[in-house]
Length: 348
DNA sequence: TATACGTGGTT
DNA sequence: TAACCAAGTAT
Image 1 (cartoon, rainbow, N blue to C red):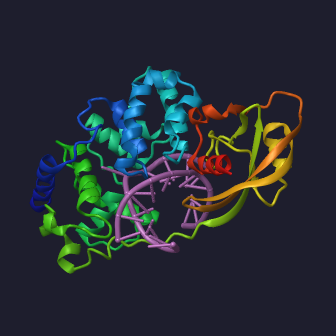
Image 2: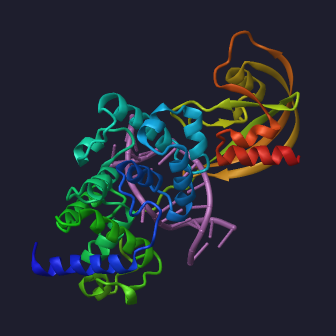
Image 3: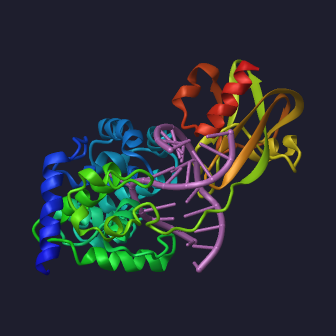
């Protein structure tokens, strides 16, 4: 590593040592805790993830406990955090580690990458932070910081752009403090080198920053726009019987997979047919109870909730179907979109 | 390579 | 307010 680069690394590490936020997963010498925090922080802000992390470590303090827990308990702890495949994959990966690795997490980036839900970023983060491996951990913050620092206008939304900047990142990682270095880059991106209003006056490496020198801070990194969310009209059924509400579990691998919600779906199909397919309960559609909407990254649901009356019941046990007493709805793993639907039905 | 996959905060 | 964006991964 050349001298100017080495001095940049030292300057940022000094800043990190002095200014870093006191976060609950910092200073815990437990690879499992690092893993949990990194998965929770994927596409998620620190302030959002923090209470979930603390509660998770209470419920599932170690790998063995997580591996032995059931799916509903795991999803209940993730409810409201979004991207639920993260919870399913973390659960499955814990079981793999217990069953195939004697309960010991892989200690290298390559080994970690073989576990479900662990990609290049997370593997690099765990390997460097928990095991001291000198590998980069390139997330959105790091892409932004490096694009500005090096004045590179590659499109960071493309695989090639990420590849180019990951190569740049690799050249910086110091052997002695790889985990602190990776966290320092992310910390800088999260607190000073922010997307819209970077605080260059307080930046410890502005003297080395090409974007700052050339007045391109606000135009870097380059990124292409995402398509607008597609609108879907959803019709959901409120089916009540003896003070209990009929819920169905979303298929494991799709949107909100594994979570519970009101039966129903896109309004291009008859509501009664969808309810029967999903729950085995036959109903007659009734009056409108309420309307709401929910915006995902890639979908906009316009939701109407209709009261339905039970008219019959198909034979056979319906897996993924539950009658839940109204007072116990809060105990179920229900995604925010469906919580909104429940709320508008209860008030209508 | 493009798309699916949540939610909440900021501007 | 609508758009943007955040400690990404899987297919």
